[in-house]
Image (tube, rainbow over all chains, first blue to last red; front, top):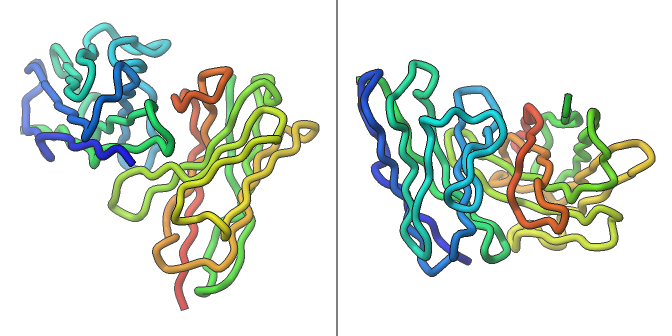
Length: 107
Length: 121
C-alpha cells in the first residue's frame, strides 16, 4: 500500500496570500495524483486530477504540479471560501490511498 | 445535475449488520464504476470498495474483505454496501462516489453527502 504524507498539517494564512501544500508518496505514483477539498460537514470536492489537471469548474487560482513522489497544490491567492482541509490521493496502485490532509486556516 | 444520496446508516452493535444504499440520478449510472469511501470521525478518508459498471468486478480494502459486500442495481440506479460483523473501527461517515474514468481508475468526481454509521454497544 502506498503511503501519502501531507505537509504541513496546518497552514495559517491570510486571504490574498499564496498557499503551497505538499504531498509525498512512499513510492512513485507517476502522475496519478489527485487533490480534493473538504469543508466541515461536506463531502470532498475534486480539485485536481492526474497531478495538474483542474476539474470542471475549479478556479484557475488552484494549480497542481509534480510527478513521481513529490507533488504540490498551490492556491495563488486565497479567497475566503478556500479555507478548508485538502487531501491528496494516489490512484497508481490499488487500493487507492489518501494523505492525512492539510488544514488551511485563517491566520 | 449529478446527485448521489446515501441512506441506511445508523447505530448498530458490534457484530451486527447494516445495508447502505446510494441512489444516483442525473447521469447514466450503468456507465460508471462506483466506490464507497469512508471517513472516521475527525479523521481522513479511506477507500472501502468499488464495483465495475456491470457489477461483474468488485474490489475491497483488506480491512473489510469477507465482511462487506458491494453491489449495484443498474435498473434502479442504485449502489449498495452490505456490512456485516461490524466493529467499532468501522464507525465512520460513508460516502458513495462516482469514478470519473470509464475504466475505474480511481478519481472520484461526484460524492454523496455521506451517511453516518456508528458501531457501539
